[in-house]
Length: 407
Ligand SMILES: NC(=O)c1ccc[n+]([C@@H]2O[C@H](COP(=O)([O-])OP(=O)(O)OC[C@H]3O[C@@H](n4cnc5c(N)ncnc54)[C@H](OP(=O)(O)O)[C@@H]3O)[C@@H](O)[C@H]2O)c1
Image 1: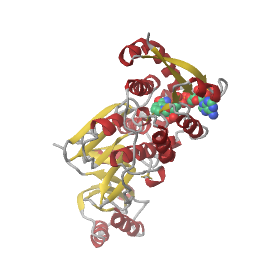
Image 2 (image 1 turned 45 degrees about the vertical axis):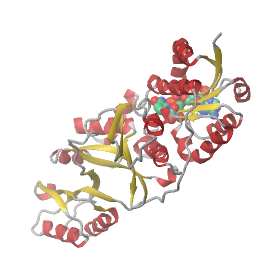
Image 3 (image 1 turned 30 degrees about the vertical axis):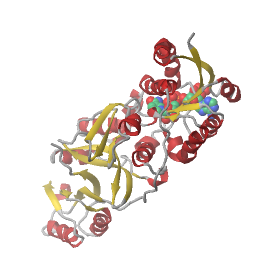
């Protein structure tokens, strides 16, 4: 007779509801591949269920509530009681990863979280298991579908950030309170998780420098098109200067870049290592049934056997001043000597220009430039000096550019 695996489901909203249905549909298949038939032992919602009873009745706890309170306490209780845990909760892992992984190891149970980063795209499994034998040097990508949808639509239609955000909310691509997505905090949490796994070092949310997309203007996208650039909110975790840099920032990419064609609510993650060159994975980064598919995949893995629990084997220093290339947009007075004065400021700060385009006349005059890579501190020193020039008609706008060419 097939054994039963009892699943305690904490949260039955968008993802939890889809997981509940998917489990029913796929229970026979899961039983056939794992020898254990999954069954829901209990459901916890605000209006339903009792955590202690569900915990006592479960072999595996699936946490799909979101937030850190009471999710942290419940997950720690489950791990401490010797139950395996599956979660899709990026903020929980990014803020409390150290104690959660330690609790899993101490109790000899699994903590799986494929759905916490890039939805159903199997980035966690690939980094932790498929690439366990290689020394990863860089993990980066588009890990927030809401912002990728907004940037794609702004570029396509010329509409403002506010107009497209409203459309995204109507279509269900953005939440009623979109601040975590558009401000970069959601992507930062995901990059903290990816950096921890890829580099075997403790990384928390506070180690990630992040910016969002709320200041992006349609004209930046329009001018950038002339350089063949497209705009993405990128998360980057990489070994730099003997330490680790983890950042989230809006960034222009040249058209040959593998992430440039990733549009709409899709996610994509690239992994680089000398032994493997690079791997790109892409697909839907959110959605009820998509995310539930990744959650059930984790349950099947647990039922099928052992998997490594993340362990930090070193402590890398966090490096904040890294080298970047920038796009710079200056609204200037239309008079002689402007370009020379800008070039003088950049030159004195050792920032060199890759390309420059002069646009418009009179009140419409502007300089749009792309710089070569240099330490960010040097570029920002130049930017502060530029802000003081008397011919500037508005605050300069700077957006990073990835120069790397892919063949
Ligand atoms: N939605 C996505 O596409 C997506 C994608 C990737 C990852 N995730 C992650 O998946 C998790 C769940 O997201 P979701 O979109 O499914 O959220 P959701 O629709 O808001 O559902 C949350 C569920 O948890 C329950 N819950 C919340 N706080 C609770 C509390 N204090 N006590 C008891 N029950 C509580 C809610 O109860 P009620 O039903 O009573 O309100 C609801 O059933 C989050 O960590 C999210 O970041 C979501």
